[in-house]
Length: 254
Ligand code: OAD
Figure 1 (cartoon, rainbow, N blue to C red):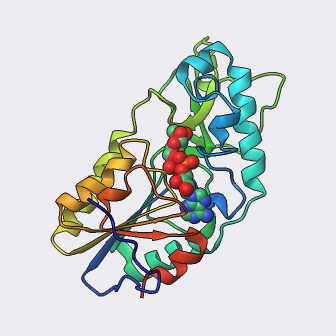
Figure 2: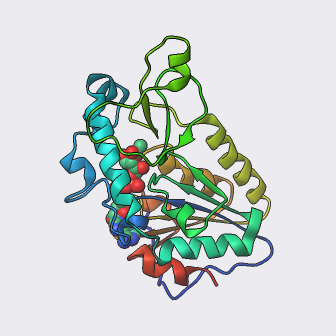
Figure 3: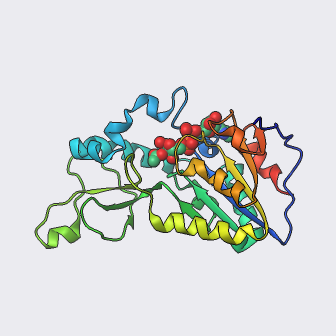
């Protein structure tokens, strides 16, 4: 199946019966200066994934993992949302509960832009949790570039020494079931209406996010990909609009 390239001038018509589910990936933050994961000079080219983004890596060298995420915290703090993020915030304001944003990004830029109906599928850079106990993840902007690593104060009360860790879904870890349920519930409601699915700035490599387009199609959704380059799963989409999301998303919805 060959996905036609859809001209960007053809926007998606929004009416009172339209439900929109948007999936974003690292490409949406590229125009804000945040590096993507794959491709030349992508994050995973410069850092071995298994060392900095896996439970085994954290057990082996928690200081290295904290330094990696602290550097990303420090940098993300200096970055601002771009017109792509704001276009999605504006769309949410128009659609209300008929809109849901699912992001694989952990940089917090969608929230900075004002998005509220958002599922952060892979966690959030500015949230920390305990590596051992079930305490609720909490907001944390601190950076741990060296020295003492942060420990869980709740565990300490019971005499246990547990390290805190970034609230990021690492390789080999499960996504939060409540996030997946929320997406499924949204799709089930959207399916009885005009349902539009848009994926933007994602390589379509990492599942289950990359499989959302298949679920959307099964439920009768019209599917759009907005990406700088063809993604791994481009052929599953009905429409492919090639280019920078910061330029395309603001022109996509009429
Ligand atoms: P990738 O780095 O895999 O892919 C980014 C995609 O964005 C590529 O297909 C680029 O062509 C495209 N792109 C780059 N700049 C763009 C722009 N300005 N406008 C539109 N598209 C652009 O990032 P993700 O697909 O988000 O997981 O990666 C998925 C997951 O893999 C991440 O969430 C992360 C990573 O391992 C975890 O850390 C758990």
